[in-house]
View 1: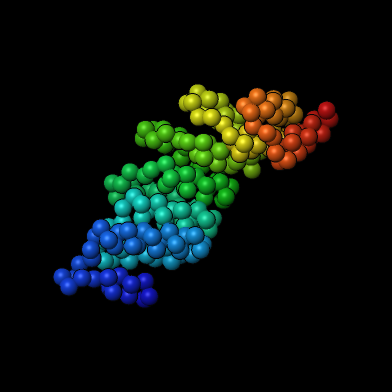
View 2: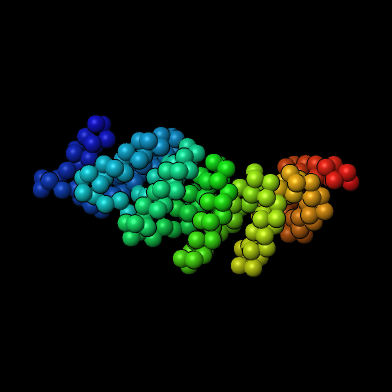
Length: 213
């Protein structure tokens, strides 16, 4: 009721919302609720927009997906991404990254990986955040081969791996006891002028322990 009253209060004398102003206002409100991890309120605002004949745009959807991501609600994030396409809206890199992150938090590595490849299918270039998040998802699933494959894909598509992506890949090798690959990635990190952090070193050390090296 409170959310609906917000929409009604914004009605002009002709009974319609001022589209440009209110799209921004609603999107900002959705984003604000998302930052507070109030994902249900964020989705409620999205529904109110439709009830008020104010069609959400790509920014509105992205803000709602981000709200679901922060709350770890991967099913809702995934559904909103599909909803964007059904509404003939083109998801952007931010939309996909938020949905991928939600799936990563939920342990849905297959969906996260699928969305990464889907980005390329629609000519949307994944960035280092996209790859790093999926590699982190592979880490949680002990999928070291997929993690290394994603690092290779980053190089193929000229995306420079960063500390997060390399550390996550090293952790994947640690989980499966592949110490040689872990040490190689540590060397790659140093050769890239990246200073390995405690997480990277500990993961490499643990991989060596598991491999009795």
